[in-house]
Image (cartoon, rainbow, N blue to C red; front, side, top):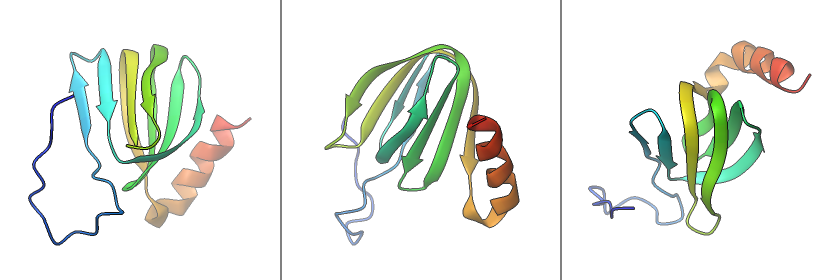
Length: 101
């Protein structure tokens, strides 16, 4: 993975940068991941420094996980990336209820 230039040196060092890099709709590299909430071959739910991120697709697999650095790499066919913002609590609740049925 390439190095990222930190354009905001005043930022707190304990909050990891959050970036999503997609390569050809087949590979995702995600930084700033706090926790992997759940995953299977069709859906990943990640807690990032910018909120919860749901990834939907087909034949999804975790290619790399570095907990210390907060980096997750996912391969497979990506259909959907959705952030579940707290300000849209009802939508997030609906999503979580569908996800954990």
